[in-house]
Length: 347
Image 1 (tube, rainbow, N blue to C red):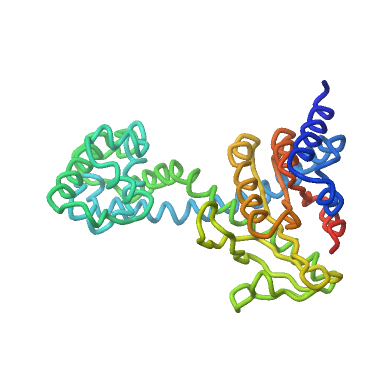
Image 2 (cartoon, one colour):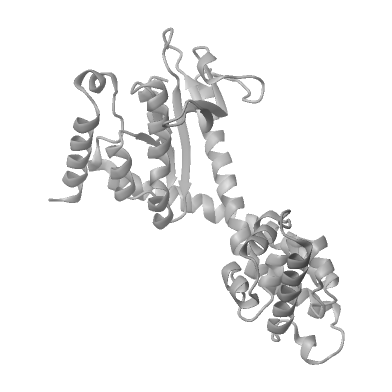
């Protein structure tokens, strides 16, 4: 069976299994039921993301690299150019740990440092991710572990980067700067990715907002008491919390939705359109994350019924496997390169 027919069959079977005839009539499909054009859309979406990335990523990387280099230089000053990684320093500035991990040969992953030093994983992860020390850890155990961490860093400091360590003298300003830039480069891959993701999300929401504004929809600031079930026809809100019931409990929790739009033609009691902005720079990560949308839409349906309208706004690397999975869950989407498809959802 050819791929397009296979995904069409998956969609049909799952649709039949989860929706009755009345509900089927109430929900109109825009892109999820058209696998014959998925291939072309995927190619155009990848091109659009890559074009944006080539224009934005170098600037994001340079900005991050400059700041990261300054942070590494501060770390070197505090450690006497990596000659003394003291317990006092690690207690006062837990945030230096990522720079220290990238200063060794080879650079140490979090779990590798935990194993080599024989220290608490909770301590290392709290320092590396949260810039803090575990509050419930005893002072004696904490100081002992911090000492071990410092000893491992000094012992494994990269001699090709920190050339002065083998000489036994103080480095020149140029040597310090060069070492700081090398460590910064090692850090920047991890630091720049969230910046790029956040910028892409901001750009997507701006695109949605501009498209709606062009149709004279009114933007309601989400931080000013705007509620999901109180939007008037012709209004929308970005980054709005929507309350849902937790399965098996009487508790209610809020889930964030990127854009909530009440169509101008909405009647009393009609639910708004919920839009989730998604972008991806490779095919691997989207298939790891594809269950997130299914979980969210199932929470919404459990709370508001099958008439809830939840769609994705896609830009980047979303392959047929991802699209087929979302279609099988009854989730539709709009490609950013064809943003006008939003109009087919009644906007």
